[in-house]
Image 1 (tube, protein in one colour):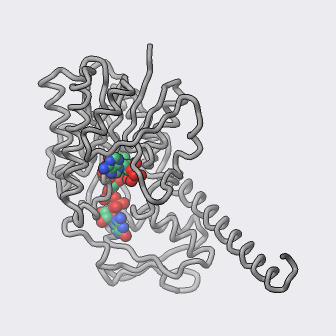
Image 2: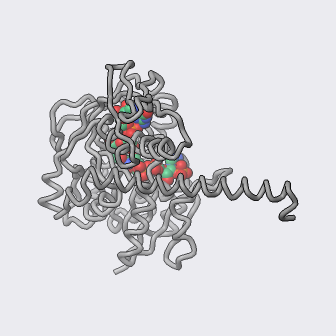
Image 3: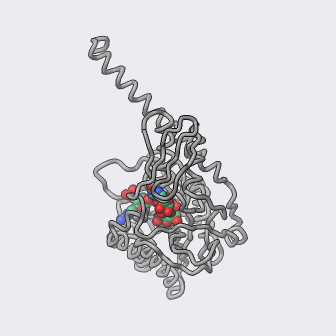
Length: 363
Ligand code: NAP
Ligand code: GDD
């Protein structure tokens, strides 16, 4: 049977892991990219040139480009991962977020219908635990009421409902994975986990003085992105199209993540004070390394996400405990310690070269 996957958002954290996963399963993998004035394909550069890996220009804000790529590729599975995915940014760009994260989903569904693929193409929609927002129960499962609490979450709620609507109205195989936060060494640098692991590595190696964060008490159910992309695939292999919560079932605070990340970077933190006055001190020297800044507070913040993955475990056979919280933090810190070390080595080589050029040792 033909296995042709189209991944929107292939340059993102999840898109890059999913592409690797599907190539490993023998799929022809097609991905959509956007033109940019700088190179942003770092996460998929190692896949380019493989015979069954293909890239196409398309934007979720542009239905013609989506129809064009869908009609050309004729995918058997679409993974719609493309989105303006930063919650805080959605307060600054609410209209763009709505266009891409809400109407963009409709554009993908319609493209499939208009290309005559409604009966043959399965569609995965990247939905989110942010739908639970100002949570109405803990932990959250497939039956928990939604209460979106940011422009991002409101846009994603439209995406969730339009997928359900197309499933019921046109009998299409389309479903949403309601994924809780998942992180990795490829996570964008402005999400809290990666911001912390990168800062811990830089501070430990003398390249940064301090880390400024927002709400340290916010609670998340953090998993490893590599484990979560497998679940996206499992959802589309299920006999019937259904929505699934994907989470670890374990919850930690931003403060705990921060403590552990610094510990793996060789620094033991001690948090003292409360609210905006809370600070993370280096226990060995007393120096303040972490401070709270109002700049990273959100107009409305989601503070208690905790998922219940019972259904995914039972019906998909997925293991939510494959990578523990401690392993996840360690993977990220180790990668950032190596990244900073390489950057420092590069700087040293450059300095040496400049000195040798100046002294005429090399010409
Ligand atoms: P990410 O790293 O921010 O990647 C987002 C991707 O979407 C990038 O490839 C980006 O392309 C692309 N994109 C943005 N705007 C676009 C547009 N107008 N047209 C086409 N492509 C566009 O996000 P991620 O963490 O991999 O998340 C993947 C999806 O899962 C997103 O939909 C996100 O909302 C959702 N989600 C993520 C999590 C999580 O914890 N990671 C949890 C639940 C749901 P550029 O490289 O060109 O910017
Ligand atoms: N980004 C960021 N930066 N968040 C901070 C900071 C900071 O300096 N300090 C505290 N936080 C808190 C935020 O207020 C939030 O409560 C929590 O840390 C997590 O923030 P993010 O890492 O930005 O992720 P998110 O939970 O808002 O959104 C991510 O997960 C969603 C799934 O629940 C994104 O990946 C979304 O795309 C995804 O849908």
